[in-house]
Length: 195
Image (cartoon, rainbow, N blue to C red; front, top):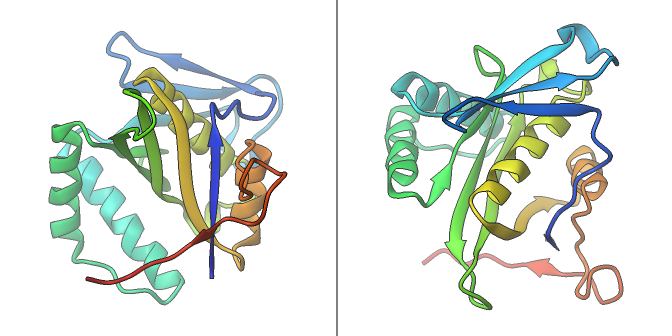
C-alpha cells in the first residue's frame, strides 16, 4: 500500500537557509545561515537541469535509486532525453543538488481540475545514500517548493511507501499530509493500474 500525501500552499519548515536566485531565475544557491550542514560546509548549490549532462546525471541517479529499492528503471539515455523533452514542453522541472549532482527531483506540472491554476506532482525525490542525514533532502525539497510556487502552483502531491520512514518525516516536516481533510479525515490511499 502506498500513502498519498498532499497539501495546499505548502509553507515549508522554519528556514535555516536562503535561496539566492540569479538573473535568469533558473539557478540558485541554498546557503546555511551559520549552522553547519554535515560535511558540506556552508554552501550547496541547487539548480534546474538544463544541459544534456544535467539530465544524464539525474537519470543516472534515478537508476541508482531504483537499484537501491530493487525496482526496474528505463535506460538512463532514454530517460535523460525524455525528461529534457518534458522540461522543454513546460510540463516538468528536474531540480538537482550538488555539482556533480548527488540528488535530484522530478516535478510534473499540470492544470488543476479545481481552478485554472497549476498544481504539481512530485514524481521523484532522491539523495544518494552516502549523502543522506545531512539536511540535503530538506534543501532540495525547499528548492522544489520554491520553484513550484514561482511557476504559480498552489498545490503539491506525492506518493511514498509506508516503509520509507525518513521520506515521510521529511514530507511531514514541510506540512504534507496523508489524510483527507488535512489531518481530520481518513487516511488517503494511492492505487495503481497498469494499462
